[in-house]
Length: 153
Ligand code: CMP
Image (cartoon, rainbow, N blue to C red):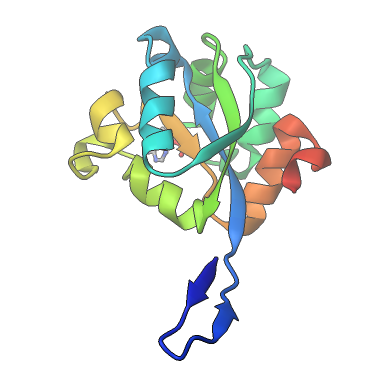
């Protein structure tokens, strides 16, 4: 961004664009939520860089959520994520990872703030409409998982 300062000197202000992964989950896809959720994201300044509609295999879901493998909800989560098509996408924006977590709201839609995606499109802690990467490192790993290294920059 180029700013003109009062002294008439020009300064280059570095902006840090970042990419992250969002998945529109099978519950939201089944409710015709794809367009509405993307409109919400674009309205918040996110640019859709890559997008696909896929029906996850059990193997893909197992690998993607491996961090939760010891959790009691793991098998139900795999059943849910393989129950119908989902829409993973790469989103770009300044401060994308942290800001997207704000925009989607708490994991449990009942606890999510008014105006967040999970509040408006989710039904319960499992059927919570969307997934978003929770750290820059996971963002890079999750983008690469669905779209390959080429989608990282
Ligand atoms: P997500 O952000 O995709 O990360 C893990 C998912 O597991 C979560 O959203 C929910 O869909 C699901 N889940 C089901 N039960 C729970 C729970 N008790 N705590 C956290 N996540 C849960």
